[in-house]
Image 1 (cartoon, rainbow, N blue to C red):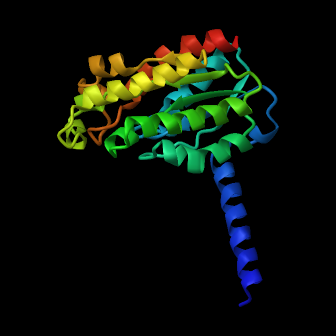
Image 2 (image 1 turned 120 degrees about the horizontal axis):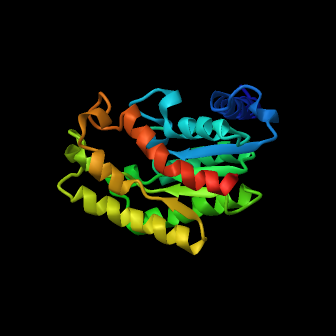
Length: 233
């Protein structure tokens, strides 16, 4: 087979994959939605690992805002369990750009820490992500950052520390998030204290004994909601 034919096939497959991912993460009729177009980026904590799609906090947030007459739709949530800031750059931002967001949230970083990504590499990647996210938003301030929860309080949490102080390590990454948010005058919702306060409650932990339960995601949404509502109303 000629090289140019192979190249065409590869290009078609790539384009088809991108279209598929967009459709997979885009609700029906969202392409033409004229209200507030919400895109949530992140990892397991944003996709709602341990709960149903409807119980993930971005879904809860969207429905809560709708009930209070905010014309909003969750256009895409391409978050994937286990993904790092580098994965967001490589995979999620293309969906974000294609979704034409007017409001966004970002909760990322736990897997960077677990995988031993240096703090300064995490910061550099976070800056790239925030630059790209703000560049796409008509109103650059319509971006909420959410801190990383402390997973060490869960039954399986300590197995991911590799002998390190998980609570301290996550706190240090959260400081990076707060510092970068402050530089841009972006609002931040800090769920870290709540995760430490309630994270050991069995009802707040999913069946995998690591991720939050639907009940915990609902608690996070209670913290995130008033900040978002004041921003968008």
